Length: 255
View 1 (spheres, rainbow, N blue to C red):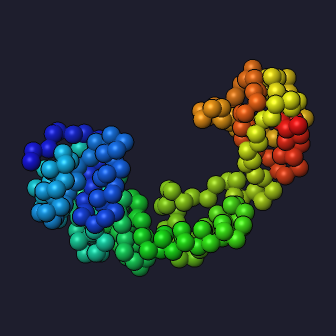
View 2: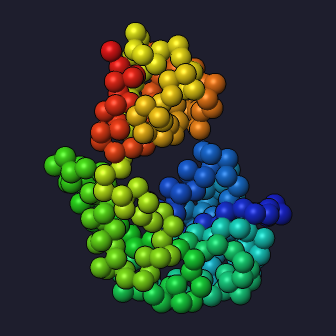
View 3: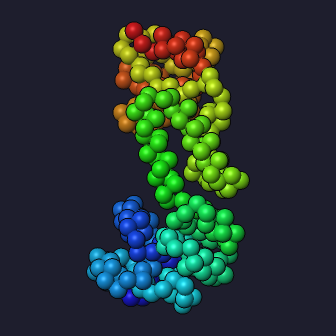
């Protein structure tokens, strides 16, 4: 099939479940993308479903050009095997040096090679799955979220070393580095001190020391409320502060 002349689109290379599910998610949220699949039956099925598909081996430059890798802004390579992954990254970067390349790695030991040849982000699949399992265990055992974040960051640093600096998704938050500071959600109750008052009238920061980050009202998030914002029963206030400050804020929002 002929692919339209897309620009700033996503190219997904691979035929594994991760690549196929990524295509489904991109399609669901109307993210323009092209799949490069080296499996005739899978390619045929996706074309039948109306997907933009290029059938062939992504190691071949003409196949990548059919998917318009030269004008793409993101390329995801979900192959797994190190040798073809390295070859595809090199081809992609030769065609489009500025494209952002995300690669699935089968083993931690291959991560550095993938970065060195041009990958911008590497996802060590089995390692991240193990970390996810561990995080869920810690949550079940009621560890605080900040403690979980610190433990996961420590494990990543031990296993990935300096390469953790390249990980955009799992960077530590400044909140994780401040042991006595938390973000808390407080439901504003009917009859509370804050009900019907503006943020300025409550003098929240001066009274309690917390910073009001956002309000959830009927499913909508209101970021950085102004001093004229009026609190209503049923609102959820997201505040930043230490435990004592959060408790003081709770007294203003609850009965």
